[in-house]
Image (cartoon, rainbow, N blue to C red):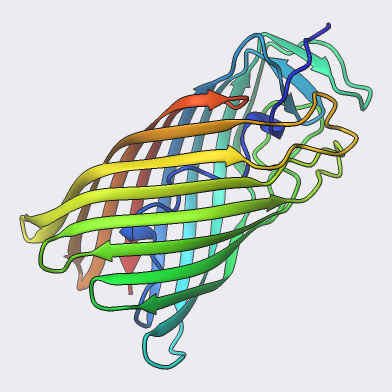
Length: 307
């Protein structure tokens, strides 16, 4: 089944999840605390029927994806005194995913795989665990702080060569991220910006190495008192681009020059429950101006409890 050559990041998406680190709820904590966070995600996307995308050793044209995810993040800001305005924290996120992907046509990228696949489904499988052993924060003043973190995506998710629906990527990603968060204590204005870079290792099953990606997420919101808590309404957005080409003997579709932009509303609410600060955040990101990736809509629900 011949497919025209094209360019595409392996799987049509990488470890980077737009909106996962984008607002005040994602900032590194200033004071000693233990945080439990629930991350809910739904992604509905599709790709062009004319341009195939590589999936685990096969190329799929006209791919459509419906992915649901639930993640548990545990974050600890230990009682370590770094002097003055500095603070340190660490975290781990364990995701579980349900992936439903269909395609119009599928062809082999080598590895002895061939044929067509109309539909595949995988449910309740673990994803790639994310560890952040380094989260440093510098508090300029009560309204503004900057932080630096390094995320490590481990290849712990379910992966099968030749499958469209995998919950793991089967390669490591190292992601340094800067964060700049302004949250006015008097005016309630939030301006959050998080630029980051993803460095990927080669997928040993397909000998495919996705190129380096640059992304920036941000949020602009107004927060105000409501029913004994603090509500927030605003807009969140991201910009993504791959800055180096795909490589490896498995990258038979060529290099990658892709990008994606997304924007949408965000709402949050901070309230004390049983004496603990609890934060809710919901957002919708609509993707536009996408090249050589899946394009669609991303829905987030985050719930944070501080102990």
